Length: 428
Image (cartoon, rainbow, N blue to C red; front, side, top):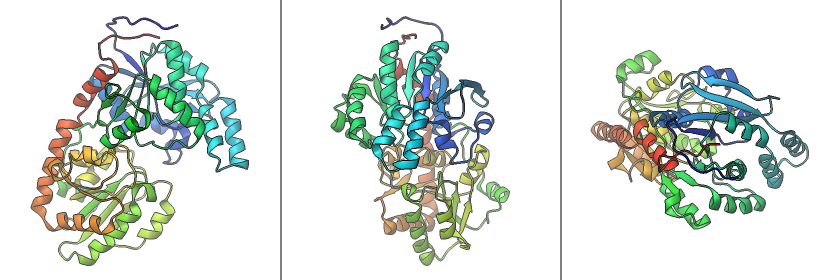
């Protein structure tokens, strides 16, 4: 039975469900325990989103599935004071994943079935009622959890929305059939990348009024440029170096790190002025291969760990001269927005979201190059390494664009208007 809208003076509450089937599917890969998540983890697109909604007066409840709990586990995220709940994964999900691991590890159909069975519907519905949620927001619409939440939302009278953070794969026909229905019946999609908006309009026929063209937010008040000399002294980076930085999850193919390393070899062969240094910050699934590619190279410094301390990451970015995003695939990357907030010019491959991020190129604070083009990437990096004044000017433009487009209050206001356009709240 659908509930009629009512006007409420309490803050609207959004149930926020992240991508992936289970909490541990992502956080185990980067070595983040539940205690670390609760007490230390901040920033990134997830908590930036939560903080942006908080600035707009939206209360957020963060929900995960997990195979490591048998009853719901609740706690409060320390930095944002966001309620978090881990819900036990259904036994059917655990059984299907066991079968897949043992017998059909490459089966897309089995993977799809496991994902559809991953959402603990009864526990989730109970938590939505318990927290007084007024809307559901899923991290990705190209994921079975979104389909499940659309069906659940309609049964509870709750609007359901989803964001785009890079998920574009629909691996099986079964999922494609459900996705068409879910996208038609959801209340709206939040998409930062113009190219992705074109894709979903062509693929699903989504009308413009149900798409919020809203970027990922950034705390630009906190993330400001700090003195480069001081940052280098604190980190032990030579003052005279010309530093190019990259940070993120060390996925060599998706993040284009092989392209960056090849381009860096070209840069080092040609660059004859100040000592070049490539600073890589982050760990992930391809650390062994990355270690093989970088070991013993004095012109590459790799910080091989997931940097939890955002102040430390802030210092690494502030110690650099140029930021590089060589990815083969992105949604709307937060990493370059962090760099732009620190006043760095960005050299980026032309993948999803980059045109929106940099407003087409130099006007927005960076240089855009074709994807997987090592020569073009090397030439753009060398151009900024050779021209200090151009690099500084693009860095100023990048900072200005971050302030004008990606701040918490600006994005938070846009999110509130999209999620609750008439100011009304539909209660569960």
